[in-house]
Amino acid sequence: MQKKMMQPSTSQQVGHKWLQRHAHVRARVRARSRRGEAYASLIVFLLPLFIVITVLVFNGLSAIAAQRRAQGLATLGIQAGTSAVHFDGSTPNISPNACAVALAAIRNTSPNAVATCTANSRLLTVQVAVKPPQLGFAGLVVDYARFRMSGGPGFGINHGE
Amino acid sequence: MRSRRGVASSFATVVAIPVFLVFIGFILYFGRLLYVRAAAEDAAAVGSRWAVTSLSGTQGCTQARQAMQKVFDGYNIDPSGWHFSVNSTNLWGRGHTAEVVIAYRVNQAAVPFFGSLLGNPSVSTRYIVPIDAWNNRYVWSNC
Image (cartoon, rainbow over all chains, first blue to last red; front, side, top):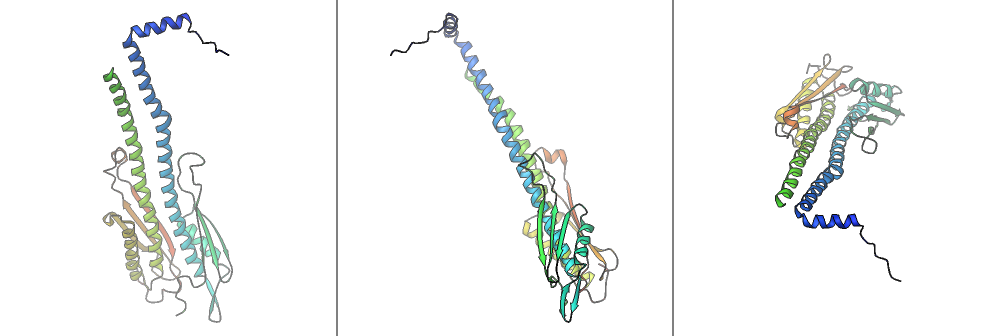
């Protein structure tokens, strides 16, 4: 079966001949479209890419700094909490008020940090969450930097002497 | 025609390079700032721990400074810009608290665009730590 070829319309034929005769116009049209392509690739592809990379770098480093803060606050809380001990004979045990001491110490240094604490007589656990400054939208943002730390009644304390 | 194409591509380059430099400047400026911030947090946490588990305030200050200095060395940051202070809120001793403060002015002069626009920022962090109830047992001295 033979395919029927599409014939150009009269106006298309005229336009084509006109462009053949005026080569400088064709060149100008091509140059303009190339310039347009350069702008388009810059705006459509490179600009969002740069923005996303920049936001990721900022958010990542900000989250690392907040993580260090959370780590420092958790250490501080454990250190304060585990120094609240009472002795059963010669054995030190964590006092019932250890969590209150730990959380007060954390709040004293950083009122904005969210801290939780659990304790029994042998182990104190503190979790600290710090909200880092972030840019951008969901998917690029780290809501909280969290650090969890546990310590026994002997944590950093020389009460054996 | 060739010159027009050249003009088009060079014009796009002239637009792209400053945009690219602004992004690089932003990354460098805030990257350096947040790196120093992370180092300061780390050093202050270590310093406060060393300060309050010492036998006296004077010793606490000395060992806290040494510990913080070692942390900064680990981060490979020029230590000349650091300012440390370790103070007790009252006389150094059990039941009181110590305050450890670190401040650092970040030299951003070499950072393109943002360095001259925003200048040299100062990073500081502060920890208030209860002085250890078991280690501090000698004569209390102010830090």
